[in-house]
Image (cartoon, rainbow, N blue to C red; front, side, top):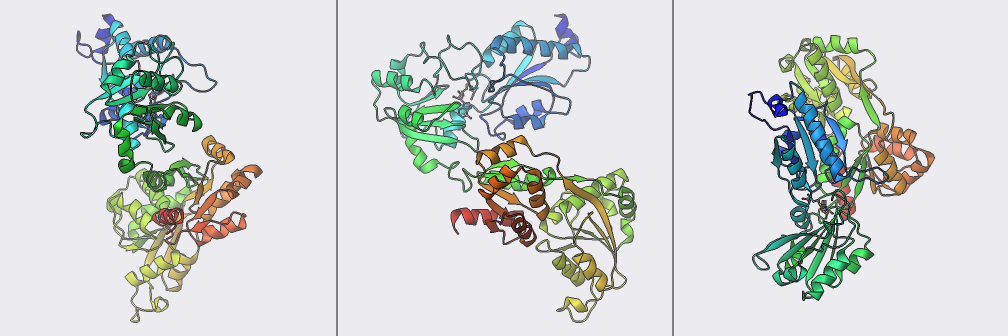
Length: 549
Ligand code: SAH
């Protein structure tokens, strides 16, 4: 085909243009390395509702995203329209001379070939003579049970597992995804399933669950066969209902379980008593609002998520250039002339590094001793390959001043910092536009020469993400975390009166005394304050508070 010869660097050889990628069951970490590599080369991504949108962060900036899943109040594409779109996008890409190494990625929830109509899309591509590849994914029918503490096979219970759609093919006019209507599969032989036993895993079977269970019972399966339904498996919102074949559909109705959910029937369900790791994580079920800057939120969010919390980021602060970027550049370009360069935040480290790159400087320019106010700032330096000589223990200015005096001081009496002499020692402080004066004052009082240079400034973010304001309004937030007085003040300034009131009904976690004071002034006294004034200290306090230690 003429199209194919365009797709190839070598005439006559067709290179893949499309790829069907399994996105995994929901948790964005449950995609394969090959899947991520494909997203990193995507020119177009056509994705469903069940593929986690967070996976799109792997794509290059010029990728076109096309959502074809079902979403409330939005027109959805039929499977035929999806097929046509897929072929069209591939042809567009193939028509471009330089498309080699870029792909049209069809990103599908779970595994593309398990109840996902991936087979049909493959056929369409094949008929259109569009070369494609397939990257399998972790299917919900295996991951869902695993995250609910249910292994789909176990030597003591079963040597078979059967995957079944609870949704009748003929009635299924469009995509599978979240859609969960229609009748129970008429072409499924329920008496064979009842006879086989083992583990039965049903996809798309929430609405039809009463019918499915009735058919199995009628076919002779014991009503006391253990059964489970797992909704939103592998997500922080995962919900599991446990019962028996005879009771499960009533229990599911009672719990108001909606799609997407997986149903598991078989003795393996009893293993959950021992193996329920995911829902037993210490912060499972907690929704936490993180108010840090986007750049800084990551660490706190990751730690909370790893412990099972659902995290919503609501950056209240943006980091921008200092008022006088020239002065910052001038100071940074001469940093080797100082005895010690001091950082009082990870932001300061990042801003300085960015400026150094503009100035064509690199890590070798850190010839002076380096001081960091605390572990987080030290860690930011470490990522650049720089190990600070002096690190404050608790990220408090006074403590860093004391540590610097210990390091440089030449007094005889080392037990009293006041007596230390720093005369002749030159410090360069690279920090925020507005900073507490304690550190500078202490160093100057000890005789040091201090150049105090702002390398960035923070300002209030323009808007909060809709997800954050909606969750606050709905009352679904359990905790708000405040990592500085500014995050507290800004959040207050950014919220409507109603939402300010809503914050009062949530728990509030403060990083330390200054933040606590700001929160109290705003009428939002913290539920607890971290004992150690850093991110690990906050996480530890949250765990202690929730688990009563
Ligand atoms: N290709 C997908 C399945 C698509 S069919 C896969 O391999 O997983 C859609 C059905 O998958 C849903 O109705 C539901 O039964 C199941 N499903 C997908 N993701 C799920 C999740 N995170 N939790 C529970 N069920 C899920």
